Each structure stands twice: as structure tokens, then as C-alpha cells.
Image (cartoon, rainbow, N blue to C red):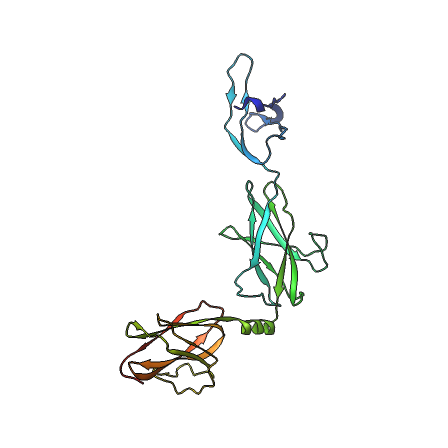
Length: 301
């Protein structure tokens, strides 16, 4: 035992005996109750760590008896809301339907038992009476899911307040974050401004072709079952929206391409003959870019 941290208990156990009479068979009814004391231990030098308590009982002249170890957590440190973000949203949450927030909370000693949040619509910087505070749900990955209504919120920046509580009763500082809510029209406009990269590789068999012209034409929607031949295309087009030239490795990267349906075309001199290849592609700026490959041969167009 840690001899520097022993705490005597003047009256460790008290017994109370109550007389309950005699039953129908003549047996005496005596009820005994053992009452364990509550121990007040000064913990000034023991806070914010895990410890084990061991009870010792010793009668004069006898060897001491020790109890099993009782693990305790002496915790005065509040948890911290480390991060929160909208879940399953590629850009901004939609104004109107409920928004789901993922919340991460850190505590080095005690488990987190509660997380809650609410909108600060009147400039509050902390939880106050009258605020609608909704509890979060613990997920299997250790994070918390907080679902909040948005029908009374406004488009643009909205302030969200989040707090957490651990098993020792410590409450975190209020985590304050801005959540940008947008209408469906605003989200469409935002998506329309996003751009991505279109990468093209042009080959003759397996040999890279340099100085081939690569063009992107914005085209009207093509029926899903329409067959678009690799050699040329009957789709009407305008002037190229984007264009570039392949490098010595046969690669051409066209940047800042907006979302939409395009005719991607590669053309140039292949073994002395001018050839053209094309394909219809759908560009989605919210997804990772991919490389489109053209393979030329001696057959020509």
C-alpha cells in the first residue's frame, strides 16, 4: 500500500439488529444490517489521474486484512469538443431539412456521457435558459451524431453551440462554429461554379503521341442509349470550350473544366495521316478526376 496516502476510518462498520417477531413455525425473525461508512479523502495531490483504493482492517494484535483494489478515476478536467462538421454533405447543408453534424469529443480520463447542441439565434455564446438544446447520439466509431432542425434558420451563416459532459460530471467549454446553410437554388449555383481537371492520354498502340490537339466541346444532352462511335461523332458542337496539346508522354491536362457533358476530341498527324478520335464524357467537379485514353492505329478515320 501507499503509506503516504492512508486515511483512517474511526468507525469502519456499524451493525443494526432489528426484531421482526416470530413466524408461523415459531422461528425468531431477526434482521441484521451492516452499514458501510462513506470515506472522505482529501484528493488535492491525486486529481486528474487513475488510482486504486484498497481498504485495510486490523484489530489490535492481529495481522492486517486487505480488500481487493477498487479502481477510481479522479477527474477534474473537462472534456473538449475537438471538431464538428456536417455529415454526408459534399458542400453546404440544405436549408429546410434537418442537418446532421458529426462531433468529436476528447477526454483523457473519463468516458463521455452526453453531447448536446443548439442554434445561437440571439447572439448567445453559451447555453442559456430558453435555448433549444438537443442531445447527440453516440455512434459505434466513438463520434457523436447531432441532428438539428433548420426550418427556422436563415440562409448563410448560422452559429451552432455544442457542449459535452464526462462521467465525472465535468462540462466542456462551449464549442462555437459557423454552419453555412443554403437553399436548393444557391447550392445549384455553387455547384455550377466548381471546376475540375480533365486528363487525356493519346497513344499509337502503346507509344505516346506528342503534339496531338485535344479539345473539349460542350454539347447538348445525348440520349443514354445513343451509340457514339470512337472515330468521330455526329453530335453537333460549337467552338471548343477547352483545348490543349499532348506532351512527350502523350498526356494533356485541361484544368478548370466545369460540370457538364462534353465531346472530348483528339486529333493530329499519325504516321503521316490526319486522324480524329472522340468520345462523349460527363464531367462532375465533385468527383475525383480521371484519365481518358485515345488509341490510334493505321486505319485512319
